[in-house]
Length: 372
Image (cartoon, rainbow, N blue to C red; front, top):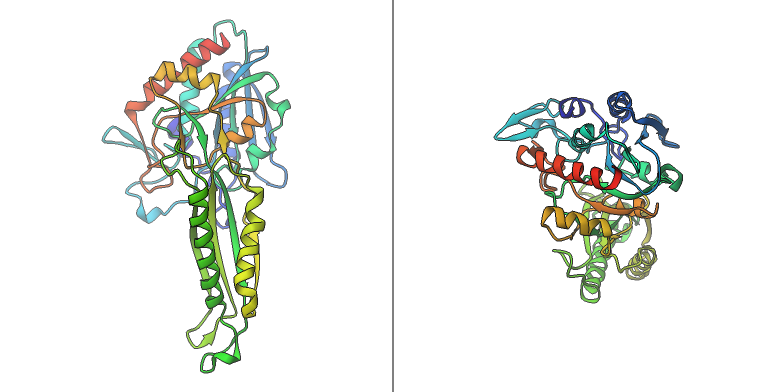
């Protein structure tokens, strides 16, 4: 199953030249699950041709268990891989391949965990769910409604956490800042207004704001206990002898669960505008996509159960997941899965074989206790 999943491309990207459909992965999972007795529902994503969510349900009742994952992967740099990203290979007790760790293998592990229990009487339903576009817009998770999981109360998201339960993560917003100046011949600075110099002022102000956030907001549950701001890419100008008329900066801000994301965009734009407008520049700040909220489920009943099974205390991570959207569906949600986030989004991505059997055992135990 892992070999077939890795071998089925489903890259999602905000850049159209890299973006692909996930439907082949969805139908692959459906073709495995339906013969096992799962009721299959494939839900197209509105406004996203070729993208779908899968909801596969076994058993009836209420207060069931959801095993959820995303069916897409990030883009890749093929020349940096030592093997074919779409052909799973085994080396040094690891399975290498795009999505092996993040997170196609989780579906195979979930199915393997469920199979021996499917002959038993299910008192509550098991739902295996696969979403679209987690690595780009999270449009799949955002489209889910309570009706999709009306008979469930608990959810596992199988992101790579080295099989440690996660009950909190930071939120993330990605923004694009555009500074407009005036072009002109570089021999006379008075002929224009250099947008790169305006961007320099803007970045200085953003760094000041970042430092202020670090002193006023802290959460010691996180290894990086303060909000972060990363300047990811910057573009401006076209020639050394021409005054630059516009510059753009794409950056992200990762907030703590205690922070209200709605406050940021306005504050950021106001501060940038204040330091550049008296110099004759204009600015525009726009989100690259809708923000992903922070996740905080510290009082989770499910996490306490998993902690007792694994011996690992619930923790927090900096990376984002679909957990906030499942929490909005009234699901007690825990993020836990095999593999390390350090291998995700990397060339030669891999899943350690040593974590596969423990992952199967954990999910089988949870399915048994919650469903049978």
